[in-house]
Length: 117
Image 1 (cartoon, one colour):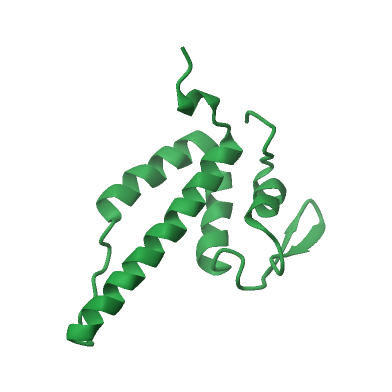
Image 2 (tube, helix red, strand yellow):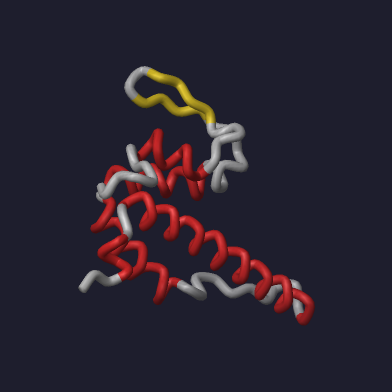
């Protein structure tokens, strides 16, 4: 009997990880905004680290170190594609300007929705 995890491929795992990180960051930002109403110095750092770090390590072990490094670059340097940055793979230049997460995973990680990884 297959579990849901058995049916996911590397693309799905990477995409789900990116989406989960974005949602978590959004809620942490909202929490900090709410705390800031009480006192501007109120901030919570690393609130989700105890959950995020093991999840990150699991994803990295499944999709591979190189793919995970590209995803980290996409998240932190490109702000999930909001910042237009150039990168080159196999002598082809790309820019993150107007690039979707789907397209980025395909180009940078070699993942497609249809491959099983």
